[in-house]
Length: 203
Picture 1: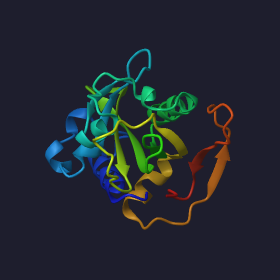
Picture 2 (picture 1 turned 60 degrees about the vertical axis):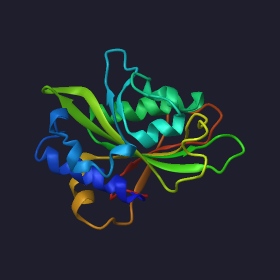
Picture 3 (picture 1 turned 135 degrees about the vertical axis):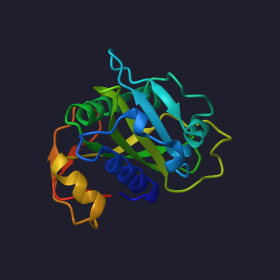
């Protein structure tokens, strides 16, 4: 995990879940992560798996210059990346596990913005496959952010973390990862892989 905010959110989620595979949506206390809220969001896992945004932090909304509530999460991405986003969401909620992605944003002909995405499963009223907690943490704050709408997000990398590694990531220094490259269902005309991190989480 490259961004401190990403690790803080992961550690908070991991502490809340305890021995469970995922915490309850109601366990999330905004005051406990108030310094992370502007980059944090919650998705609903609806029956059709359109994944509408339930809540989005202010900096995420500023990236797109609009309110994101009810917007399908994959619609924030380039069309060629949307199948990959759906695939990683399926992995997060079915296993359940955590996922990290590298994203790229920005208006055309402006300085690009690199973001780190984390997706974490949540229960809702005891139901699994119900909610996702996530964050998009920027590496920098470019001058155009909040003034010009970003083009759809570009997916640069995806990594999922298996259950046996989740707790180790939360309490230990990050080891050199052993990465297995798997076929990805997604981008047409793009050289892209979905990675399962076996020994740790690559940044």
